[in-house]
Amino acid sequence: MAATPDVAAGLVALEKEMASASVGEGEARLSALTAALDGLDASLGQLEALSAQAAGPSKIPGVFSESAMWLRYGVSTGGYPDDGSTSGGSSSSSSAATAPAAAAAREARAPGKKKEKKKKEGGTGGKGGKGWAKEEPTPDFAKMHFVVGVIQKCWPHPDSEKLYCEQIDIGEAEPRLIASGLQKHIPLDEMTGARVVILANLKKKPLAGFASHGMVICAGDEKVELLTVPAAAKVGERITIPAIQGEGQAYKDKETAHLTPPNDKSLKRVLKLLTTDGEMRACYDGKAFEVAGGFCSAKTLANVAVK
Image (cartoon, rainbow, N blue to C red; front, side, top):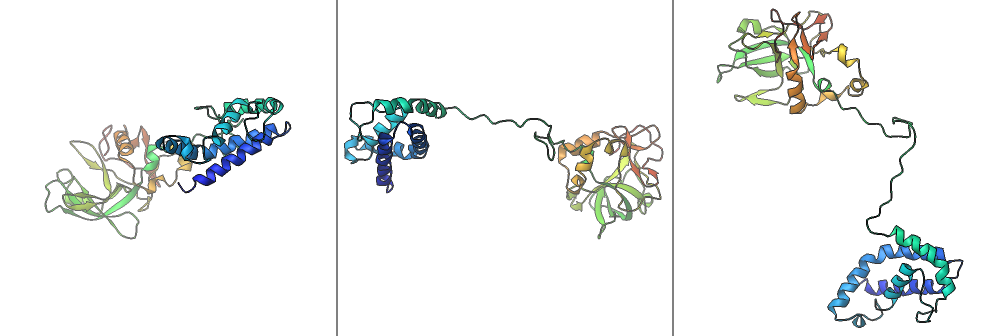
Protein backbone atom coordinates (compact mmCIF):
# COMPACT_ATOMS: atom_id res chain seq x y z
CA MET A 1 0.00 0.00 0.00
CA ALA A 2 2.85 2.41 -0.76
CA ALA A 3 0.49 4.54 -2.84
CA THR A 4 -1.84 5.34 0.12
CA PRO A 5 -0.29 8.76 1.09
CA ASP A 6 -0.50 9.88 -2.54
CA VAL A 7 -4.16 8.89 -2.71
CA ALA A 8 -4.85 10.77 0.54
CA ALA A 9 -3.09 13.89 -0.70
CA GLY A 10 -5.04 13.70 -3.91
CA LEU A 11 -8.34 13.50 -2.06
CA VAL A 12 -7.50 16.50 0.09
CA ALA A 13 -6.50 18.53 -2.97
CA LEU A 14 -9.71 17.58 -4.78
CA GLU A 15 -11.77 18.52 -1.70
CA LYS A 16 -10.15 21.96 -1.61
CA GLU A 17 -10.83 22.52 -5.29
CA MET A 18 -14.46 21.59 -4.74
CA ALA A 19 -14.81 23.89 -1.78
CA SER A 20 -13.22 26.89 -3.51
CA ALA A 21 -15.06 26.55 -6.81
CA SER A 22 -16.98 29.66 -7.85
CA VAL A 23 -20.53 29.54 -9.14
CA GLY A 24 -19.37 29.83 -12.71
CA GLU A 25 -16.85 27.04 -12.32
CA GLY A 26 -19.21 24.62 -10.56
CA GLU A 27 -20.06 22.39 -13.47
CA ALA A 28 -16.51 22.15 -14.75
CA ARG A 29 -15.13 21.42 -11.27
CA LEU A 30 -17.75 18.78 -10.57
CA SER A 31 -17.17 17.12 -13.93
CA ALA A 32 -13.45 16.94 -13.18
CA LEU A 33 -14.09 15.51 -9.73
CA THR A 34 -16.44 12.90 -11.14
CA ALA A 35 -13.76 11.79 -13.60
CA ALA A 36 -11.19 11.71 -10.79
CA LEU A 37 -13.44 9.54 -8.65
CA ASP A 38 -13.61 6.96 -11.42
CA GLY A 39 -9.86 6.50 -11.15
CA LEU A 40 -9.79 6.53 -7.33
CA ASP A 41 -12.63 4.10 -6.58
CA ALA A 42 -10.35 1.08 -6.46
CA SER A 43 -7.92 2.76 -4.05
CA LEU A 44 -10.74 3.99 -1.81
CA GLY A 45 -12.12 0.49 -1.58
CA GLN A 46 -8.76 -0.78 -0.39
CA LEU A 47 -8.52 2.03 2.16
CA GLU A 48 -11.97 1.21 3.49
CA ALA A 49 -10.96 -2.40 3.95
CA LEU A 50 -7.78 -1.39 5.78
CA SER A 51 -9.74 1.04 7.91
CA ALA A 52 -12.12 -1.69 9.02
CA GLN A 53 -9.22 -4.02 9.85
CA ALA A 54 -7.56 -1.29 11.90
CA ALA A 55 -10.77 -0.87 14.00
CA GLY A 56 -11.50 2.68 12.87
CA PRO A 57 -10.51 5.31 10.31
CA SER A 58 -8.58 7.33 12.90
CA LYS A 59 -5.67 4.87 12.68
CA ILE A 60 -5.01 5.84 9.07
CA PRO A 61 -4.02 9.49 9.58
CA GLY A 62 -5.68 11.94 7.21
CA VAL A 63 -6.31 9.28 4.59
CA PHE A 64 -10.01 8.67 4.40
CA SER A 65 -12.00 9.71 7.43
CA GLU A 66 -12.81 13.30 6.45
CA SER A 67 -11.49 14.10 2.99
CA ALA A 68 -12.97 11.16 1.10
CA MET A 69 -16.22 11.32 3.08
CA TRP A 70 -16.83 14.99 2.24
CA LEU A 71 -15.69 14.54 -1.35
CA ARG A 72 -18.23 11.77 -1.91
CA TYR A 73 -20.91 13.77 -0.09
CA GLY A 74 -20.37 16.78 -2.32
CA VAL A 75 -20.55 14.80 -5.56
CA SER A 76 -23.58 12.78 -4.55
CA THR A 77 -25.65 15.76 -3.29
CA GLY A 78 -24.55 18.53 -5.62
CA GLY A 79 -22.77 20.62 -2.96
CA TYR A 80 -21.58 20.84 0.66
CA PRO A 81 -23.69 21.78 3.69
CA ASP A 82 -23.57 25.51 4.42
CA ASP A 83 -22.32 25.17 7.98
CA GLY A 84 -18.63 25.89 7.48
CA SER A 85 -17.70 22.36 8.51
CA THR A 86 -15.67 21.77 5.36
CA SER A 87 -12.36 23.40 4.77
CA GLY A 88 -12.97 26.51 2.69
CA GLY A 89 -16.63 26.76 3.79
CA SER A 90 -18.67 26.07 0.63
CA SER A 91 -21.65 28.38 0.22
CA SER A 92 -25.23 27.47 -0.57
CA SER A 93 -24.97 29.41 -3.86
CA SER A 94 -22.10 27.14 -4.95
CA SER A 95 -24.18 24.10 -4.03
CA ALA A 96 -27.10 25.36 -6.09
CA ALA A 97 -24.85 26.05 -9.07
CA THR A 98 -23.32 22.61 -9.04
CA ALA A 99 -26.56 20.71 -8.39
CA PRO A 100 -27.53 20.22 -12.08
CA ALA A 101 -24.05 18.97 -12.94
CA ALA A 102 -24.10 16.67 -9.91
CA ALA A 103 -27.40 15.18 -11.01
CA ALA A 104 -25.94 14.54 -14.45
CA ALA A 105 -22.85 12.98 -12.88
CA ARG A 106 -24.95 10.66 -10.70
CA GLU A 107 -26.96 9.61 -13.76
CA ALA A 108 -23.76 8.88 -15.70
CA ARG A 109 -22.30 6.89 -12.81
CA ALA A 110 -25.47 4.88 -12.12
CA PRO A 111 -24.66 1.13 -11.85
CA GLY A 112 -25.54 -0.96 -14.87
CA LYS A 113 -26.05 2.03 -17.12
CA LYS A 114 -24.13 1.74 -20.33
CA LYS A 115 -23.76 4.11 -23.19
CA GLU A 116 -25.68 3.01 -26.25
CA LYS A 117 -23.63 2.68 -29.38
CA LYS A 118 -24.85 4.90 -32.14
CA LYS A 119 -25.67 3.06 -35.30
CA LYS A 120 -24.39 4.55 -38.49
CA GLU A 121 -27.13 5.86 -40.69
CA GLY A 122 -27.80 4.78 -44.22
CA GLY A 123 -26.22 2.19 -46.43
CA THR A 124 -26.01 -1.51 -46.04
CA GLY A 125 -22.26 -1.75 -45.78
CA GLY A 126 -19.33 -2.33 -48.01
CA LYS A 127 -16.39 -0.06 -48.69
CA GLY A 128 -17.36 3.58 -48.44
CA GLY A 129 -20.75 2.75 -46.89
CA LYS A 130 -21.98 3.94 -43.52
CA GLY A 131 -23.50 0.69 -42.31
CA TRP A 132 -22.15 -2.76 -41.58
CA ALA A 133 -22.15 -5.39 -44.34
CA LYS A 134 -23.00 -8.91 -43.32
CA GLU A 135 -20.37 -11.12 -44.90
CA GLU A 136 -21.74 -13.96 -46.95
CA PRO A 137 -20.71 -17.40 -45.69
CA THR A 138 -18.37 -19.37 -47.92
CA PRO A 139 -20.44 -21.79 -50.03
CA ASP A 140 -19.54 -25.41 -49.28
CA PHE A 141 -18.59 -26.24 -52.86
CA ALA A 142 -16.21 -23.27 -52.98
CA LYS A 143 -14.21 -24.96 -50.20
CA MET A 144 -13.56 -28.06 -52.34
CA HIS A 145 -10.66 -28.45 -54.74
CA PHE A 146 -11.71 -30.99 -57.37
CA VAL A 147 -9.02 -31.37 -60.03
CA VAL A 148 -8.11 -33.52 -63.00
CA GLY A 149 -5.50 -36.20 -62.29
CA VAL A 150 -3.79 -39.10 -64.05
CA ILE A 151 -3.01 -42.35 -62.22
CA GLN A 152 0.64 -43.03 -62.99
CA LYS A 153 1.03 -46.18 -60.86
CA CYS A 154 -1.39 -48.38 -58.98
CA TRP A 155 -0.78 -51.45 -56.80
CA PRO A 156 -2.72 -53.47 -54.24
CA HIS A 157 -2.13 -52.43 -50.65
CA PRO A 158 0.07 -55.13 -49.08
CA ASP A 159 -1.97 -55.22 -45.87
CA SER A 160 -5.50 -54.67 -47.16
CA GLU A 161 -7.79 -56.63 -49.48
CA LYS A 162 -9.86 -53.51 -50.21
CA LEU A 163 -7.35 -50.78 -50.88
CA TYR A 164 -5.35 -49.75 -53.91
CA CYS A 165 -2.30 -47.53 -53.48
CA GLU A 166 -2.00 -44.98 -56.27
CA GLN A 167 0.58 -42.48 -57.45
CA ILE A 168 -1.37 -39.69 -59.17
CA ASP A 169 -0.20 -36.66 -61.13
CA ILE A 170 -2.40 -33.63 -60.37
CA GLY A 171 -0.09 -30.98 -61.80
CA GLU A 172 1.98 -30.42 -58.68
CA ALA A 173 5.75 -30.66 -58.33
CA GLU A 174 5.42 -34.14 -56.86
CA PRO A 175 2.71 -36.75 -57.54
CA ARG A 176 0.14 -37.45 -54.85
CA LEU A 177 -0.06 -40.75 -53.01
CA ILE A 178 -3.67 -41.76 -52.46
CA ALA A 179 -5.30 -44.93 -51.16
CA SER A 180 -8.73 -45.92 -52.51
CA GLY A 181 -11.07 -48.74 -51.53
CA LEU A 182 -11.49 -49.93 -55.11
CA GLN A 183 -9.72 -53.29 -55.20
CA LYS A 184 -12.97 -55.27 -55.34
CA HIS A 185 -14.66 -52.92 -57.82
CA ILE A 186 -12.23 -51.88 -60.55
CA PRO A 187 -9.58 -54.06 -62.24
CA LEU A 188 -5.99 -52.97 -61.77
CA ASP A 189 -5.42 -52.49 -65.51
CA GLU A 190 -8.29 -49.98 -65.66
CA MET A 191 -6.77 -47.99 -62.84
CA THR A 192 -3.31 -47.49 -64.34
CA GLY A 193 -3.26 -44.56 -66.77
CA ALA A 194 -6.85 -43.49 -66.03
CA ARG A 195 -7.76 -39.78 -66.13
CA VAL A 196 -9.75 -39.23 -62.97
CA VAL A 197 -11.39 -36.65 -60.70
CA ILE A 198 -9.47 -35.99 -57.48
CA LEU A 199 -10.60 -34.13 -54.37
CA ALA A 200 -7.19 -32.69 -53.63
CA ASN A 201 -7.45 -30.43 -50.58
CA LEU A 202 -8.08 -33.08 -47.94
CA LYS A 203 -5.74 -33.53 -45.01
CA LYS A 204 -3.22 -36.33 -45.28
CA LYS A 205 -4.64 -39.40 -43.54
CA PRO A 206 -3.16 -42.87 -42.92
CA LEU A 207 -5.21 -45.73 -44.38
CA ALA A 208 -3.94 -49.13 -43.22
CA GLY A 209 -0.60 -47.45 -42.61
CA PHE A 210 -0.46 -45.79 -46.05
CA ALA A 211 -0.36 -41.96 -45.97
CA SER A 212 -3.23 -41.02 -48.29
CA HIS A 213 -3.49 -37.42 -49.43
CA GLY A 214 -6.69 -36.94 -51.38
CA MET A 215 -9.68 -38.88 -52.73
CA VAL A 216 -10.41 -40.54 -56.08
CA ILE A 217 -14.04 -39.67 -56.92
CA CYS A 218 -16.18 -42.48 -58.31
CA ALA A 219 -19.82 -43.15 -59.14
CA GLY A 220 -22.00 -45.95 -57.78
CA ASP A 221 -22.45 -48.15 -54.71
CA GLU A 222 -22.53 -51.88 -55.47
CA LYS A 223 -21.30 -51.28 -58.97
CA VAL A 224 -18.57 -48.62 -59.03
CA GLU A 225 -17.05 -46.70 -61.94
CA LEU A 226 -14.32 -44.09 -62.19
CA LEU A 227 -15.48 -40.71 -63.45
CA THR A 228 -14.08 -40.05 -66.92
CA VAL A 229 -12.56 -36.70 -67.85
CA PRO A 230 -12.57 -35.10 -71.34
CA ALA A 231 -9.30 -35.40 -73.24
CA ALA A 232 -9.07 -31.62 -73.61
CA ALA A 233 -8.87 -31.10 -69.84
CA LYS A 234 -5.37 -30.48 -68.55
CA VAL A 235 -3.84 -32.35 -65.63
CA GLY A 236 -4.32 -30.23 -62.50
CA GLU A 237 -7.20 -28.22 -64.00
CA ARG A 238 -9.78 -27.30 -61.40
CA ILE A 239 -13.25 -28.72 -61.93
CA THR A 240 -15.97 -26.08 -61.60
CA ILE A 241 -19.74 -25.71 -61.68
CA PRO A 242 -20.49 -22.49 -63.60
CA ALA A 243 -24.22 -22.96 -63.02
CA ILE A 244 -23.80 -22.11 -59.34
CA GLN A 245 -20.40 -20.43 -59.15
CA GLY A 246 -21.57 -17.62 -61.40
CA GLU A 247 -24.66 -16.91 -59.30
CA GLY A 248 -23.19 -15.20 -56.25
CA GLN A 249 -20.52 -12.73 -55.31
CA ALA A 250 -19.57 -15.17 -52.52
CA TYR A 251 -17.77 -17.41 -55.01
CA LYS A 252 -15.73 -14.50 -56.36
CA ASP A 253 -14.89 -13.35 -52.83
CA LYS A 254 -13.84 -16.84 -51.77
CA GLU A 255 -11.63 -17.78 -54.71
CA THR A 256 -8.87 -19.07 -52.42
CA ALA A 257 -11.11 -21.00 -50.01
CA HIS A 258 -10.20 -24.29 -51.72
CA LEU A 259 -6.52 -23.87 -50.84
CA THR A 260 -7.13 -25.07 -47.28
CA PRO A 261 -8.75 -28.35 -46.17
CA PRO A 262 -12.52 -28.14 -45.65
CA ASN A 263 -13.98 -28.92 -42.25
CA ASP A 264 -15.77 -32.25 -41.78
CA LYS A 265 -19.27 -30.72 -41.80
CA SER A 266 -18.75 -28.98 -45.13
CA LEU A 267 -17.22 -32.12 -46.64
CA LYS A 268 -20.14 -34.30 -45.54
CA ARG A 269 -22.68 -31.81 -46.91
CA VAL A 270 -20.94 -31.74 -50.30
CA LEU A 271 -20.54 -35.51 -50.57
CA LYS A 272 -24.21 -35.96 -49.71
CA LEU A 273 -25.20 -33.84 -52.73
CA LEU A 274 -22.90 -35.51 -55.28
CA THR A 275 -24.72 -37.69 -57.82
CA THR A 276 -24.85 -38.51 -61.50
CA ASP A 277 -27.78 -37.19 -63.48
CA GLY A 278 -29.83 -38.90 -66.19
CA GLU A 279 -27.01 -38.30 -68.68
CA MET A 280 -24.44 -39.87 -66.30
CA ARG A 281 -22.74 -36.50 -65.70
CA ALA A 282 -21.26 -35.93 -62.23
CA CYS A 283 -23.27 -33.24 -60.44
CA TYR A 284 -23.36 -31.28 -57.23
CA ASP A 285 -26.89 -30.48 -56.12
CA GLY A 286 -28.15 -31.28 -59.61
CA LYS A 287 -25.63 -29.10 -61.45
CA ALA A 288 -22.92 -30.66 -63.62
CA PHE A 289 -19.15 -30.64 -63.08
CA GLU A 290 -17.38 -28.92 -65.97
CA VAL A 291 -13.83 -28.75 -67.30
CA ALA A 292 -12.28 -27.76 -70.60
CA GLY A 293 -13.84 -29.92 -73.27
CA GLY A 294 -17.04 -30.83 -71.47
CA PHE A 295 -18.28 -32.77 -68.45
CA CYS A 296 -16.98 -35.39 -66.05
CA SER A 297 -19.13 -38.50 -66.38
CA ALA A 298 -19.61 -42.12 -65.38
CA LYS A 299 -19.49 -44.69 -68.18
CA THR A 300 -22.84 -46.38 -67.60
CA LEU A 301 -24.28 -45.29 -64.23
CA ALA A 302 -27.07 -42.71 -64.20
CA ASN A 303 -28.78 -41.26 -61.12
CA VAL A 304 -26.44 -42.82 -58.59
CA ALA A 305 -24.37 -41.48 -55.71
CA VAL A 306 -20.93 -40.05 -56.38
CA LYS A 307 -18.25 -40.37 -53.71
